[in-house]
Image (cartoon, rainbow, N blue to C red):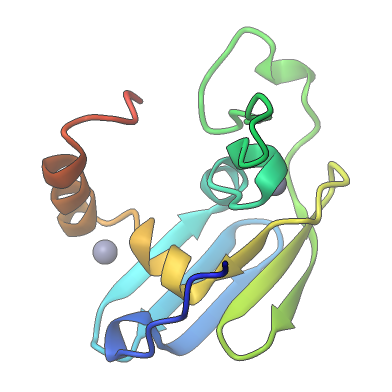
Length: 131
Ligand SMILES: [Zn+2]
Ligand SMILES: [Zn+2]
């Protein structure tokens, strides 16, 4: 049921820098570098609730999407980050959410750099519809 982790250089972090107020930076073993803002990570939460994996409505928080209601949200922060095994981290958000386990595999997939975004857009043909 769980997809197996690919253990190639592209999904193995060489160095992970975690800042609870700004986000996560990863230097990958293949030399690639990724940076993830808190808002982006929260939006990309891979848990079943956020992705609607149980057939329920996705509970996307849309922290990364500007909305008229955004000003009412408390500033997003990570309360703590816990290493899960060798290949994932679990984030405890200050909004009480903590079921999202971010595998490095997933993190590499959602890399925000120009190169990766272009590659994703090309293969998804604009499926996400953001921006
Ligand atoms: Zn979630
Ligand atoms: Zn990238």
